[in-house]
Image (spheres, rainbow, N blue to C red):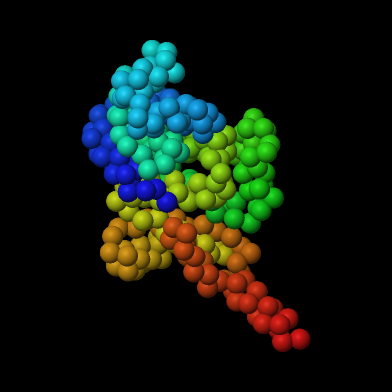
Length: 275
């Protein structure tokens, strides 16, 4: 949880700079890349992080440190974003890295908007999450912070080679794997999905069934969940023959499993406890 000062600083900074970031269009990609690099730097250099958040240090000194780190090689808007962040007060030292990461993801979302692929990225992130749900060993390896970052990245690229994922989807997944930030890979995917769906003004509802849903079923489910949630939803239809029948519905981190496989599992557990 971020303290009130950090929440206020993050919200105010993003609200003030969002229009400029949105107006960058495809140029937002470069800013996202640069901010991911800075996020990684802050996560691995506590001394720099403390220097940029020290309330007793003049803002001018903090901005000078930013310029020294970037060495005049960053986009001017990247500099503006970081200058704005270091000028604000933070409840905890590490909160500034969270804010930089938020801006980086925002930049990637605006790039997705500019290239008309925002919905595609949101769907691909949801499908990636669904595909990894039953791969506990793979998820563990992708989240293993004791393994070299390159090894985790190589594994990610091997697993999704040939999947033709959008470049934004892959870049976000690469960030999640290269710099886990003490989060499990699945948790980061859920966070990214939530950010994209909020950005689109929609909620992503992932429905897993044994056979593909037809368009009539998808439209009916969209109407049901739009009414239930009070906002537009996008139905991400996922097929998993192992569920046998019924549906598994996921909205954010909440899962309602009414599949035949889940009911059989519950029955087996009940029988085993009664024996």
